[in-house]
Image (cartoon, rainbow, N blue to C red; front, side):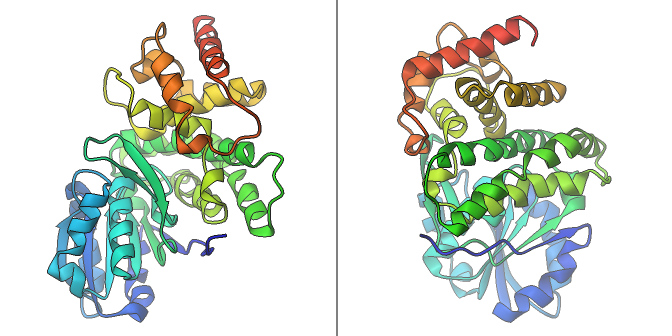
Length: 356
């Protein structure tokens, strides 16, 4: 069993004000690593609150994807080697790259998500890709971030599509974790993780649409914070408690297959995952839950058929074949075959034709 460190986080429009008190115990120097746009949004605020408390030795681009090569390159930067701690700023791929770099250097990590697109900022798992942007593997650090600072004003001004996809991604945790864990004899910590996973859906379905409207207007409303917590923290609470093999299943397997399957257009992680979730619920006979997720997906235009993720509905064979061999499918409650997944996809297509 891996070590379990429950997420520590601060959220609000003034979340960064807590940085000196929380991070000051770990040293007096830091570096900022992230994407260009994310650093532009958060770095001035981080530098301002650190003045007189923590010296920022430099700010660096994480690379172009979450790869081991990019993480290793970061470890060779002199300022990164010298810093007492590392601040990861941005979305999932920037954060996961920085998480792995800090793991290699054995330095304290603090995260500053500028997107609410996934739970990367509060988990220990790093989702890594090949240099050609196809999925490579997931790998665990020895622990998650020491603290996560979630500035709701920055997320309100983040790109709308990432928040939109984040709503879709978070919903998968609600169903994939208990699906993978079904029938297993789990210890107390893992049981807690499974229970935490089932706290995601209500926050997304209740607050998600109004929170998305807040991002559209670039303002903080009463729905934004609970929706952000349901995207970032609630799934993360599950992830830190459970083994890697229980953290995902068919919904993420379909996404990871999608990265290796020819398709039209560019499609965000969470959007494809949500389509995969609908397929999983169909396959498992959870029709009432399938309908809830499809209704929500349609209400905010998340994918709900193969063409929405750039796959020809007449030819999903490669997508199905590839998904059966991803690591996400190592633990499942029963054998899942090509024919089962294919039929579930065709059933979803039929629902779409019927307007359901």
